[in-house]
Image (tube, rainbow, N blue to C red; front, side, top):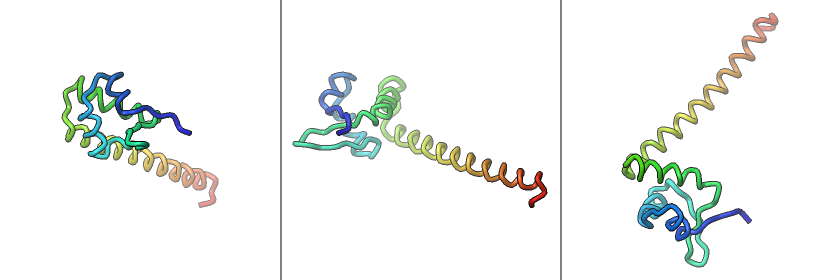
Length: 102
């Protein structure tokens, strides 16, 4: 079974409003599991939760801002991956050209 932490524990530990947690879930920024009417966040999603919490409380970025930043970072990661793939293909073509097999 995967490790998880309840919404109520997160609210106490991070000293946040429960409505903020619920808004993150409602906006699709966090995925939760529900069991016996208790909402849980998987430990693997804690870094994202902490990032959103820091941005919201420390940098005073509102929820729509969090959504925009999250989407931009996701797109940047996609572009980085595509760039790595293209560089790999270019390297393979370059190697074939240098060997005279082109």
